[in-house]
Length: 436
Ligand code: CMC
Image (cartoon, rainbow, N blue to C red; front, side):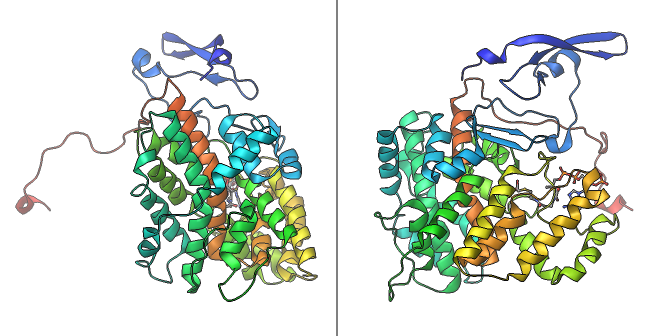
């Protein structure tokens, strides 16, 4: 990795008692400076303490930049709005993986390579049949992506750049197939094989919604909407699931297993599970009249309820993806002729009230991408249990791009955080008969 911009321009001084230490300050191309504490323990015998990593940069990266105060999201420098408006998902995948937008020839070659890897090993079908039909599709996805590590032994030598690239292409190509299989399995329909003459999004819709007994043709406006949802979710720098993938990968683990770890992390309601939770919440609110009651609950410190789809660790402004998502929601509902969606009415009113409420304004709690994505995915025909699966599908390229960047970083070491120990100090074993 080019570390030329990482040279120290100045230093920060840490003073404890009578002793002082100079710590180098690193500068990125944009964004806050970073105090390099890599040698802190060796020099001072102290660790830093930062639960939730709110002030800690865990790595150097050139992939995605977020300015949370301004509400800016850039992939390789390009604003998310421009990529979502002008490009397609596979172009975004190429950009995230290789660092530059593809030429026409590079794009055609990339599309071809991804399309030719969409089938999964036939043995995977049998693997699926071991799951209960009522299993959550995320549980099935975690397991089936993990199982890929048992199938593709020719792309798991992570020290070989060629094998790394094949593993990356395989992941991007096969994740829609596995996601669609998880869905089909849950509703008891036969798996639908990928069709290579369809674009990435249309192929996914076809694998989810076609059945062998009937012709299905993906609506291009809906395909475009799902493609845009994939672009919006493709990467988001060092979030919980991406950090999980990096940490798992830092030990040299199998790349498919690392992505499975990322999917497991994404599942939680504070992360990727929020779109499912946001839609459930809108249903629970049920009518515009009940919004104040739920706003009050969200503000009540003694009530664990939170407004799902609101707030973000990094964005302290409107999530730029939420704006595009809101537009896409209207487009999809318009195309499907859904004039009155009561949940959309509740969402719009809830957003309006929350954005004026002192509690939310003070804490800079704005709608995030998950606030509107649930309504769109439901209109497209997906059950709520599939929402996080679609997020995982789209984020796979981000995870694999970040994993690849980490492996290619010469300064990469196994991730191993330290702790502030507050448990018992040394004590001797007490035989059971003498315990009180
Ligand atoms: N509803 C009500 N209060 C909230 C909410 C919310 N959704 N989010 C944060 N707060 C309050 C929180 O109680 C705290 O108040 P106080 O300072 O009085 O104690 C303050 O705002 C700061 O919250 P925090 O929990 O310290 O913030 P965080 O950065 O640790 O959490 C978050 C970020 C996204 C987990 C949180 O905002 C949340 O739980 N939101 C709802 C779930 C959600 O929509 N998640 C999707 C995130 S975007 C998709 C993704 O990246 O995966």
